[in-house]
Length: 465
Ligand code: HEM
Image (tube, rainbow, N blue to C red; front, side, top):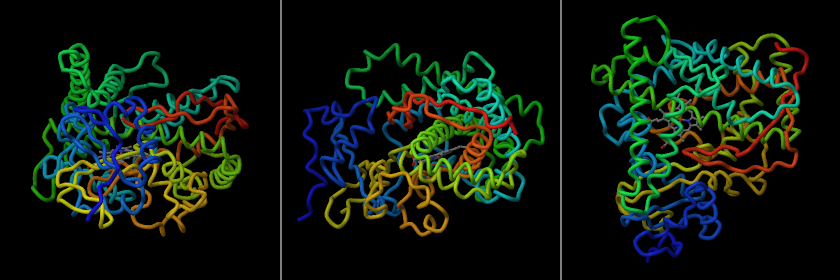
């Protein structure tokens, strides 16, 4: 007789386990549950919803089978969907606009990495422009000013995305105040994270709701202005906005609608900024705690890039820098959990029943530590295990920071090029130290996770290159 994925944590009537999930530190709550209940457990949430969480590689591997499980946005993603509808990140299976946008943008992102009308390589100069702004800011901080790593990497990621995707400059490294769109997006994401955990009747949230819809309007109006300006003054930029305006879906022959373009412009900013900035912040934390890896990375940068300007050709010649990022994404996946829905009544590992339509969470913060794949030193930061040779031979679905299958991250090559460039440029020009040498990793959670209160200092090496 099949056993339940349980015992489930004991909960309360009506709200189930909802009150046991820390709304500002969900990852910690899920880790605590994993410690207590093992590789699989089921949570009961208000509205008779249940979610089956899996924490081991073998069960994550099963849930990556797209014939058995599919992404159907729920929880936080459903709230974000209020702002960006059937954009790529929040679309439901079978929605036509997802298919059109996916087919129009996928070649831009993946196939034409090196050739074609719009390639990630082609965005290098603009990425370099924003990275240089950050390096200059670090130089001006001087050696004794604490640098709020996550804040500056968020500026880097947002400005890079806005410039490379729609030719728009937020100028976050110069402006005192955040651009209104950036502020609205921050508020919108925090509110989207909180809304699914509500336990009181909607009446109590009227003021919050009004602000939430106001922020959505700011986001959409700004994206619409950018779109209309481009239509009024078409240019030959090889960016995502032009790819969306001019691209034709090879399957249906259709163009993307204006609404779908606006949905996806905002989607790129949402999906791409915290994730990339979190990755860079965690990478610095890990490197500062692991002097051996720090030295190896800087030696590689010195050997490959030397003292001259970093170019696009250098990016693929920095295997250790890439390995540092992969290992960071294993230990500290900014999206530490992603969701799928069961397409049928089925058993996991031949014994844990999951019902058709039931929500499931793939908890990477645990499956990425599974000793069956990563060994007894799974908790240690060892970039060597992520050099191409071992990395390419990892078991299927062992490393999933970019999600799965058709719904995997479309921005992966973009994010990797940007992050390799930023690491290489910064280590070429600076030495780094932890501002507080006793600092130990604390996590701040919004839609993604990032190090909380992590400050470092940058000491210039011998003049900026
Ligand atoms: C999807 C991670 C950077 C755009 C995803 C998913 C993950 C992810 C886990 C799947 C989410 C799910 O299944 O619900 C990351 C990480 C990044 C990163 C770790 C940085 C290190 C970016 C960037 C962009 C981007 C820079 C945009 C340029 C998207 C989009 C989707 C997505 C549009 C939805 C794809 C679809 O469903 O068709 N990302 N992402 N991401 N990401 Fe990223």
